[in-house]
Image 1: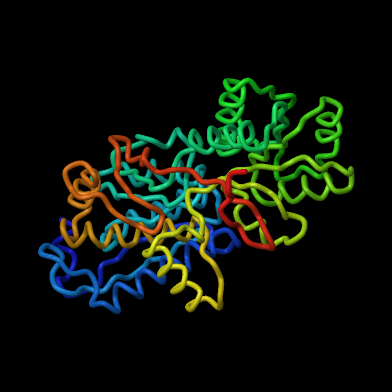
Image 2 (image 1 turned 120 degrees about the vertical axis):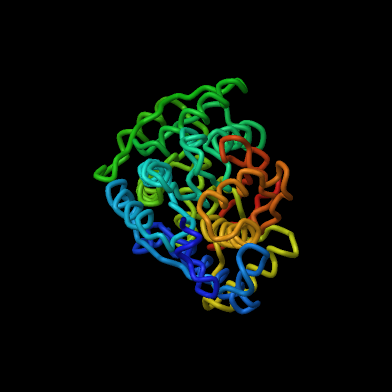
Length: 364
């Protein structure tokens, strides 16, 4: 038994897996470390089955945002009997690859993703959970915002040709069409794409009045630069993978981004988190990936305190959060898991980039 392998007074080890060598992984790593430091400063994980005051320890693994690397990371974390659960992975494709490892074998390992949003992940195995809304919610909310708030009727879409990009593209297009809008053109991008100008020029000819970017930050930056060169001034909206583009300053000014979390969320718990994060990291603000990881660490600490240091017991406790056991109140909101390990009650918000910050958009 895993419980028997853990010394009652030793640290409780949680894996942390994400693209930490890349800018998009920075907030996730920092916020997870902050949560662990806070929990340990208060005496560690305390509870009936966990023992008294055991420190938390992270086993950090960089998956490089790659499916192949994520599988190797998952194999390493799975094979370590001290690892009781995993926070991660950050994005959908690595999460899907890793979930096959964590969910198999004789001693499956819980993974709780802060931000992997592909709908196909829901119910992928009984040990997978996430605390973020899926692309179904992001695409639908972006479509509603484009139609109602921006009064857009003809949309152009540029999407990254992977699970994330295709997922946001399809859900946006379906919802926008149901509202009465027309998707004039939808064009794929890959990391090797050198220019989006042909797509943008065709969209101008087709008469679009909003551009939806279902891409990562590099493709969005390319689109924004080429829009400037072409003199195009469409409103630009995009999914949460654009988070971080606010660092580009004037280039990203006015871009609308859907997110499960915004740092200016008005909540006492979140206010304390944002202030603590700023003190720890030289005035920086957490993004949705960081806030999600922070919540997952605290959630797992609660669960391990109740269930004890046993992989199956942790899973059995997690699945009851909000359904037999109390919901979890975090900085990202209320966590109540459904039968697929999803949080259908979590809301998607629309932020706008103003003066280099992603802030809550106020309806016009």
